[in-house]
Amino acid sequence: ALQVLTLCITDNPKNRAKFAETKGVHKAVVDFLSETDQQPSKAACGQLIYISVFGNLENHSGFVDAGAIPALVKIIQRSSYPDALMWAGAALQNIAASYCKNEEDPDDRRCYWDWSKSNDEDQDVQINVEESGQVYVDGTNARKQMFETKGLIEKLIELSCKGPTRGRPTMQNPFPGENAIRKFYLKDTTIPPHEQSPNIITWGATGALKNIALFPEAKTLLHPHITCFCRLVQSNDWLESNKGQGLVSFLRPADPCWFTYEDGNAESEPTLCVDKMFLDQEGNTCEDYDYGSTDEECAAKDIKMGITAKEACCGCEGGIKDTVG
Image (cartoon, rainbow, N blue to C red; front, side, top):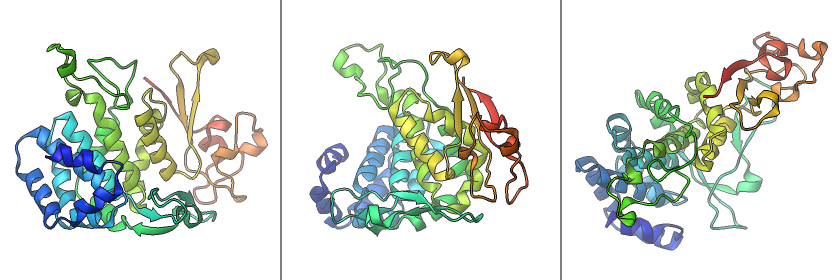
């Protein structure tokens, strides 16, 4: 029943609205999520929540009020079943999101975010109202609740940093962004179903972190793990790469991830360098310094910390260096 409901409301805002109007449905799903011992059933609940809250105020508030966040957090903290972990992370991602109402495209409920143009130390991402329209669902309180949940961010970081998926996808170890073929269809009992593949966990956890990062205080916990998130940007799987890129863009106003390849060979393992936080008096970030910057240019100092671009920026041979592997 959970799976059929999910199919009925996927890419169907009208059915999603009908689901929201059903009296007691949000509490019933959350109660079942909390009470069932069957991990596939927990995964099905997570997937239903993930789909139903997207762009729908009634489902979003209904599931938050019914206690979906702590129920999903328990899965993140206690489960070892990949499919349940993936959908719990994905559901937290959509609950932590804000949604906007764009009159020109009513079906697109996404909010589009930009960094503010100011050069002060409180600079942060803001909704681009001109592109997004007005906020329809505000996820601020949900993000705050997740941030204040003891151990949640740390666990999501642990799950996220198990990625990126390496190599090429196989039927035994499918990429999350691929349509996995289940052993049911292959009639081969030696191939585990994709629900049991650890590959599928990372994108859900990273997606949750991406939207929690919109809560300003969360950035302090996430910044020390920026090298991990940069690696996800280079994932061979498009879904991991997409979530990693989104998370990095919410943490920094300029892309801090620099990848170089030995002798220009893109098939070799890249060396990763990550820019430190840097903003000079002229409003330049490390993105404005490239490998052709002069020593004089790289002597510029950060307005707050006092470190030079030569210490902070990869383009000036500074930054944090690491090898992707």
